[in-house]
Length: 143
View 1: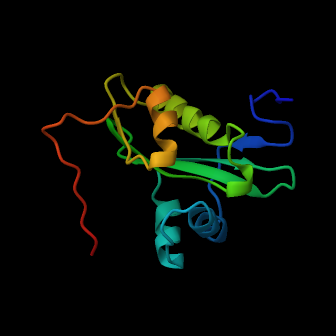
View 2 (view 1 turned 120 degrees about the horizontal axis):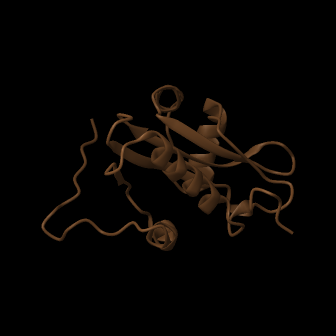
């Protein structure tokens, strides 16, 4: 049965960042690339906002964050859920809360972007995300 947040009973959505240990564990166990302690500290400290979900035992089991300038550009990042908690709507709740924060604080016309891993693609498309125009190319640089 679902609780008031739309999450299953025992789960709670929070406007809070994980600890560096929780951040690193969520990334790694959910299949995202591992990050160092320093990278985790920087990600947490410099995010525009975070949403996390605690599970029945009180520990954080899902997260997502927004990186951005707070004005018009926002990047959805680090959407992660422990495998044993997937399929319960936690990612959807996190994404919806992140998008609601953008809608609440940014002017209309904000640009929201993300890089979709195949497992998350259906969720992102259900919220209106679409591939960028064919004439554009996503690029990255690792230093």
